[in-house]
Length: 352
Image 1 (cartoon, one colour):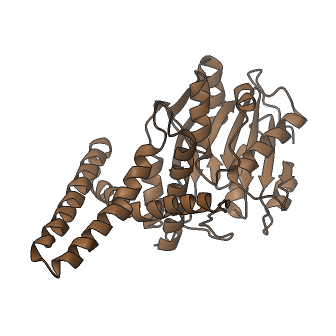
Image 2 (cartoon, rainbow, N blue to C red):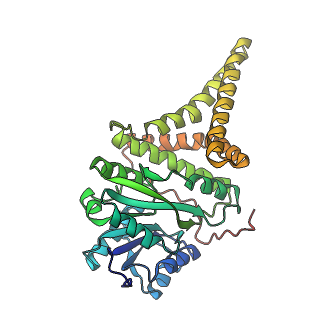
Image 3 (tube, rainbow, N blue to C red):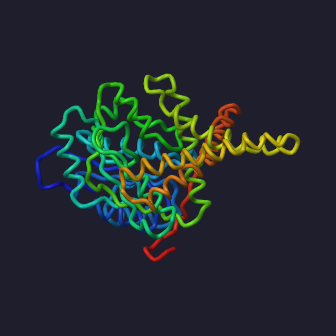
């Protein structure tokens, strides 16, 4: 595929990664056809018609070697290498997850932003959920995507990046099962580059989460990513991921353990119940602080309460993710992928 744009500005290639994304991938690819100079779809062993559909659209397809462990980082890196094999003089590369539809006009906006700002190594926009009201968990994702704009530490998987510094950096860390974008941006920022998020919608994402088990797996993966990132860069000047790891362990394991110990002690010494009361009080105060901070930015109290509640509930699976990473490290084992979606999940606005 070689869809040339009508202007003479910098050239852009796209890498789309996916596995069994079904209709989500179709929307993704169709939103990009004709808007970029070159596109490569990297497939991680799909069993649906993803590969066939991409080829019907004329998209270059790269199928990952099944004998090697899959990671999103590996898919992005191999897609990038394939892009440069076909067109070595690309200026920028837009990385897109296969469950995201790119908003019309985004590619040109991101391209222009990088053209006009030589200090920016990467630029992203806002990711929105396609069906935020379809489920409680989709709504949580939509709130999560609403991050700060301007110069930021990292952006997320959907990002346009300069080709040369990306190549010099060695790309994404293929040993990471999640959180690879933040780790890459940390390395690039150390080289003096800046990362920028525009206050413009970039992609429509389809989390397709309808069950608690899906939310749990996704949150477990986040905890693993925190721990893995911290293990590599905790001595950096910004103490990368140290705070979220400590928070996950303290609230996910430490506080519940303390409350249980106090309850057991209260069977023999009644004043030990004071410890339980203190844990409950600290939890309520922390919950209220998160609600207040969220309400200041959103002015939406129901959303603030929902977000705050799940922030605290997420600490347990995050702590389990941290423990899982540490356990695998001690045993010299490599962590496998954590997938929370099914191949044919399609959530509509009416889903509850």
